[in-house]
Length: 129
Image (tube, rainbow, N blue to C red; front, side, top):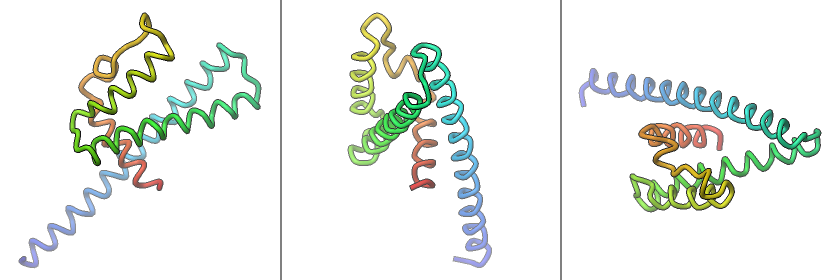
């Protein structure tokens, strides 16, 4: 490899790392906003005090990790680019909670953007673990 190619390769690695950092920061911001919205909504509906709010925050974090791990492991371990297993698992969990009348399947809820978001979630998890 020539000196120019090595320099270009090093520059691409730096650029890719910078891009991953930006994506991770954007995803963390989205997740923080989603958490704020969830805790405000939960308080509005359930009139949570500080103790229940702390319990909710812990459960929210656990559920977020569970889903992120499910999507990442399905893509990595099962080499399932469409995430059929993960989406089916998510759908079963959500359907049980909200009921058939209020259920929206994964593909309809997320549309075509879910793969980009899964990549972002993976980047955040890699940077924070």
